[in-house]
Image 1 (spheres, rainbow, N blue to C red):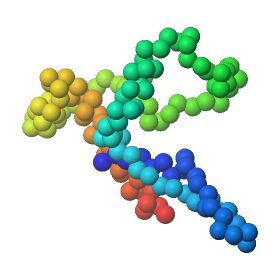
Image 2 (image 1 turned 135 degrees about the horizontal axis):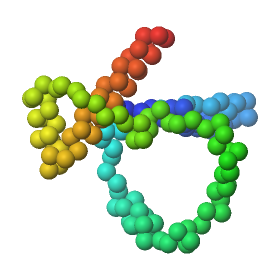
Image 3 (image 1 turned 60 degrees about the horizontal axis):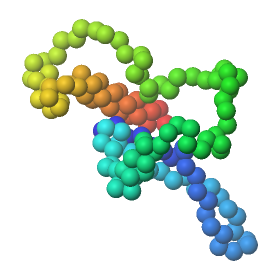
Length: 135
């Protein structure tokens, strides 16, 4: 199961108990299964509907800085974003494995994407296992 930890992206501080205590950062760890995200709440769906119906010029972006070319000069592609990096290849799979992916795809479509997701989940798990061994 491919889960991403967001421990490095969130920090909370401990509340002051008294003046003698110091505030130390506490790392908060949560896991998100990228292959099985939780369903949206009705409130989230309504917010998406409202945003989808807005005209671009009605969206307030005043709190977002304008990024020029200078801001992107040291940018790198997200290693988990592979849409533009896909390669066409020929691969031989066991017939029962291919049949399973085709049967579980909607109308038989998208099975190649599902195979890619399964392979990515496996690679991420192996990388995590290797990282744990390195510690």
